[in-house]
Image (cartoon, one colour):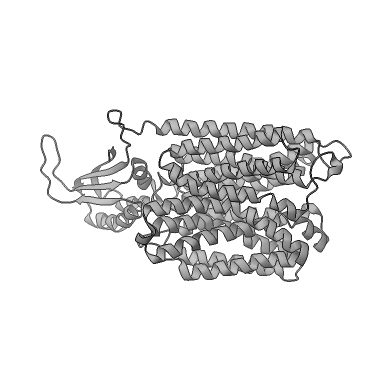
Length: 568
């Protein structure tokens, strides 16, 4: 679609969505280059200072599914504004001359903003033309990752010349601008949406995620207190199991677990978990290697600011890949794109493992990583949203971002463990060979990711007409009402089902019109609803909103309900 055909408000909405996603990602990453400054300013250990990053990632992972569910309802605009207000308050706490504990509270508040990325995708899908929304969602996914490459060098530069408070002041300034931007540009959610937050489920999920990310971040716990670590790991598994069972049973799930069981969604999330761990592992290895002093026998001894500049190829090529991917997606299926992107990241690992004797080679590896991550991130939403109703966009993508956070934490933990194992007793820095070992672990992770994506592509391949080769893109609900025992229950059902179906992307083609029945056909009330894909039709039936309608219908009717696939 040409720019001239896009409404002016939509043209303004796109940069607003991109800016907000970039800001929340950049602000959350501020903890990385400032850890040393925090330790010296507040006179705390480096392990304690590390929590300025960890706590932001934790609060983001916990807040993301809750915000995703709220974003699926009628109060999405209010949710976005309230969240940005929390981030602004958190920014103020990081700037004010308060004790270290308040700095952690502020960083936790800033981390909540990470949950907004999925909501930005939901806004794009609801309020932009279809072809425009796909490209915008892909770029939102990309900027949510390359934001670290933008925030890292800026924060390091400000910390070097203006001190710690100046660096955190940058976060406060840009989030305040983001709040004003959202106030002026965020539209209200479409009518007919409903969202109920299962508070008990949210608390159980928060507990499970906290333990998972805490155990991934506290590597010393596994070596010094193994029994405690194992106990906490078992508790995390139990909490997540209880949460999954409760989500399947409740009528108002925090995450539509039934939709997550779809092969495309499950496969994409598995790829994100394993691939995310590999991607973050390489990012960690390169930045740490660049800052290692020459006295270790390798490394380049770069300052925090100069090391941040090493991320520029990552950000630039990641953005380029994000722009190119939607065009490539027109010719290559999403899972194949994911597989190719994972292979590119694997190539970055190979490059780092075999050639890192000069800074140019590190920059090349970082560029390959950025291109692979950008392509992977841009392709991921398309794979998931192809089988997700519009109303569940924020919820589905929020789960994917939780999985990504866990993957990143695992990647960081794996890198730390491998390098620690390669550090000789009494030495501060690991042996150079430890970096090669860690890179080979990353190669294995990306190989697994590539194979998982190829398996997903093969599973999707039968979705073509074997006679014509045309892609199967339509799905239909066909309902024939044999008897109507309780008209009041039917009326209650219709009141809830209509908005639920529209929110899920369904289009009513026929309802209660004239029917000419032949042979054993039934001439009673017939309803026909069309969806863009068979997967979308299945997901709509399993959605929380439609399940609520079915509960209202109960035994009010006897009907023949079928979901069938059709050809475009």
